[in-house]
Structure formats: C-alpha cells, structure tokens
Amino acid sequence: MSKLSIMAYTFGALLFLVSFSMSIFYGYKVVAHDLPVEKKTQAKFHYHFVLVPEELDNEYWRLVEKGAKEAAKENGVMLEYTGPKQANIDDHLKTIEMSAASKVDGIITQGLSDEQFTPLINRVEAGGIPVITIDTDASNSNRRAYIGTDNYLSGYLAGKALITDTKGQANVAIITGSFYANHQQQRVKGFRDAVKVEKGIHIVDVEESEISRVRAAEKTYQILQAHPEVNAFFGTSALDDIGIAQVVEQYKKQDRIYIIGFDTLPETLEYIRKGTIKATVVQEPYEMGYGAVKMMIDLIKGKSVPPIIHTNTRIMRLEDLPLDKHGGVEESQ
Image (cartoon, rainbow, N blue to C red):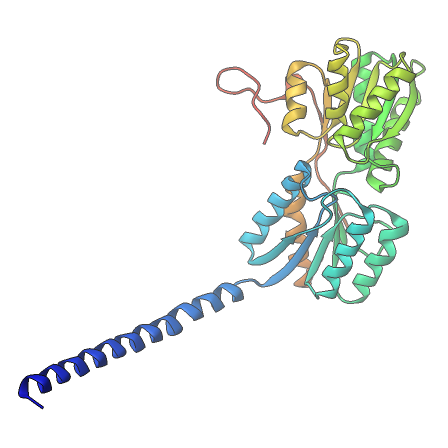
C-alpha cells in the first residue's frame, strides 16, 4: 500500500471517529436534557379534575370552562372538560361514570335530575372521589358542595321584573330548556310564585326547548299560532330567548311582545340593544367554574368548604349595559 493510500485511509478513519463521537454526544444531550423536561411537564400537575357540562359547545358552558381552566392553571391542576355534545342526560351520566372509573381526583358536574343523578353521585362519593355540583344542585345527594345560581331566586327575580316592566298586565308563555332538569324546574317555580299574586298576569302555556334555539323558535311559532293573546315570553335557558326573539322579529311584533330571558350571550345582548329582548337574568358562569376548582382543591386538602355558595344573580336591561368610550353599549364579557 502506498504512503498516499495509508494517509487517505487514516484521514477517513479519523473523520468517521469524529462523526461517530459527535452523534453519541448529541444523542446523550437529547436523552439527558429533553426527556427530563417532558417528565417535569407531566409532574407539574398536583390533581386531575373533570368538569362535565350539560352541553360541550354551549356558549354559557364555555364561560364556565374558562373560569375553571384559569383556576386550574393557577393551581397546577389538570382539568378535563368533557361531556355530551348536545344535552343528553344518559351521555352525561356515562361521562361521570367513566371519569370515576379512571380514578380522577375530583368531579365537577350538574345535578340535573334527583332520580338519576343522586344515586350515581352517591356511588362516586362512596368510591372516595369528591363531587361538587355546579350551576344545578343535587341537594339530596352526598355531593360535597354546590356553587352556582340560586335558580328559584333567579326565576323569582325574572317574574318581578316582568311585573314591573308590563305594569302587571301580561299573558305569558314560558319556554324552558327542560321539563326534567332541576334548575329549569326551579326557575319556572320561582317565576310562577312571583307572578301568581298579580291578577293581571296569566301564564297561558309552558313549552320545552330541549336546550335548542331552533326548538325554542319552533315552540314560539306554535304558541303564537295557538294563543294570539300572548304578549310576553319568559325563556329559562340561555338559548330560549334568542329563539323567541328570532320569531318575534319575523312577525314584526317587537313593540307588542315583551321578552325576558337568561344569560348574556352576545346574541342576547344584541337583541337587548335593538329592544327586542327587554331584560335578561345575569348569572356568573366564569365565577362558578373558577370557584368550583378552588373548592375542590380545598376539599382534597382537608379544608372545610360551605355546602352551598350562591353566585350573584341580577336583572339586566338596556340601561344596565356598560357604555363604551364612544357612548355606545359595550358587549359584556
């Protein structure tokens, strides 16, 4: 072998050794530095909670989720937001059962029906997983605490607002999200109790929207066909008043039909600005979500929490909407 060949061979061997050494070095860097970072990311969560809404993509429940996730982020909690895509009690119950089976640290959910939710909540609690009800209570169950609206009071406030705004003279139709959900029943009951002493107020019909603005609109149309004397509506869930308002505007009866609804979704606020919806019951979904996560952490740490925390409820009319810097009505957040 010539001297030139020996030099070329030696140079090639050195180049291979350098390349191989660099590969080993950087491979070690990846293993030594990247993988522990991933482990730290997984280890940063102290607890695993599940929030089960009535309906996943409902704008009201997205506000609850927003508050819950903010509290979770601040306190090192992994929060899952999961449940039925559309309101469905069976799917809701299955989600709670699956969450309990996966041994999460806590479950935050509604208590929609005593008959179905109470025994399930009791089983989950008996298995060592704390349950907090939110928005809708299951007061007969072993749930640890409830945070949300006083639903009877909210309906009562709506009834009193209608009396004031109509001067005690109205033929009212009620469209409620569900005949079977506890919170919807309580809102209707509170409204009935508020108006029953007024001789000029008559509840003509009560229909169910199934938490759907399309269904609420259909029911509004049917009511106006069957009861032309109706000149006021009360919608007990966030989408009811929107469906009612759509039909009332279609019939061009904004000036003759009074509407009071629930919540401050952007469409509701727009209808208030236009004068189609006259008033709405304001809840605090963000505060419910935020407070529920904080309460669950306190429970797990062995701290005492109040069995019931009622978030603020009030009536909003056009004059109550905040003004922007130009003097117009600003959208509520």
